[in-house]
Image (cartoon, rainbow, N blue to C red; front, side, top):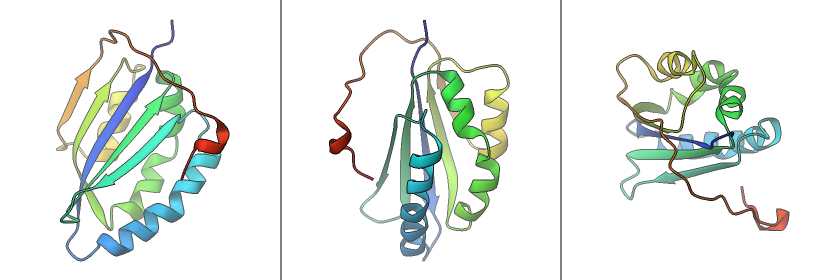
Length: 133
C-alpha cells in the first residue's frame, strides 16, 4: 500500500528580508502548483515577529516527494538569499537516496527528525473550487 508522506521545514528569515521573501514565495507558489501535481498540499506560515517561516507539504507517497524534490536544489538558491533552513521533519517512509537529497538541499548541519512508521489516518478531498493559493 502507498503511504502518505508529510514534509515540514522550518526556516529563519534573514534580518530585513521578510517582505522580499513573502513576494518571492507568493510568485513561486503558482509554479509549484502547476508543475508538481503530486504535491497534494503546500501550506506556509510565518511567526508574528516575521523571523521564522514554516512550510508543510503533503504527498500521496514517497515517489511524489521525489518528483517534488527534482530541481529543488536549483529552486532553493534564490530562496536561500532570504531564508535559511533550521529544522526538517519527515513523516512517512522515504525511497532510498531521498534523505541524502534532502540533506544536500537543506545543508548538512540542519537537524532532521524522521518518523517513518505510518500508523493510519485519512486525507479529506476538497472540491476544486475550494483550493486557495
